[in-house]
Amino acid sequence: MDAAGERVEAGGGVSPVCGFVVPSPLESLSLLALEAMAVGTPVLCNARADVLVEHCKNSNAGLFYQDRDEFLSIGQSLLLGLALAAAAPLGDLFESLLKRDMGVKDSGRILGGHGGVLDRVDAQLFAAVAGFYVILAFDKV
Image 1 (cartoon, rainbow, N blue to C red):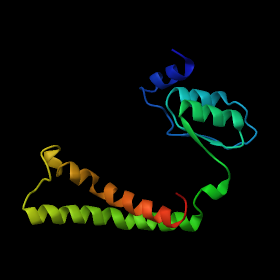
Image 2 (image 1 turned 90 degrees about the horizontal axis):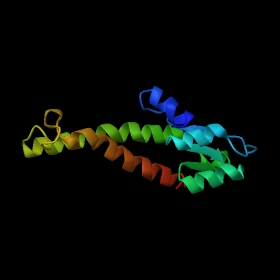
Image 3 (image 1 turned 120 degrees about the horizontal axis):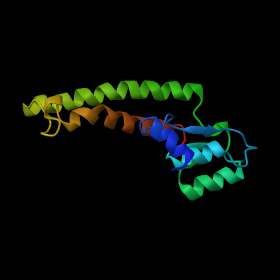
């Protein structure tokens, strides 16, 4: 087993980070980025770092960005947050309305005591659609 795998195994099999960022355009080859890719941690690197971009493309283990304009501004981030904060409870209320209308306590037999699977994902479904359309409105898709 390689060193990166040993570190993940020592941590209980879970990678300690959810992503690895390499912002430098001058980075030719980052050993830490390669270790992150090896254990399945996604990498975000500067598109001007040609070698890392090639590794991201070949391994399908990362993304790259050209400049800061590819990200949302602070105002756009706040609007996105507001849209998600409004849509998630609406999803929950909509699913509760469907269950009341049908006269059932759970929306399915899987996860029966918790309201069913739909009760677990209702907020995420509404928030994902709202988030998509807000980001689409910002011309970021």
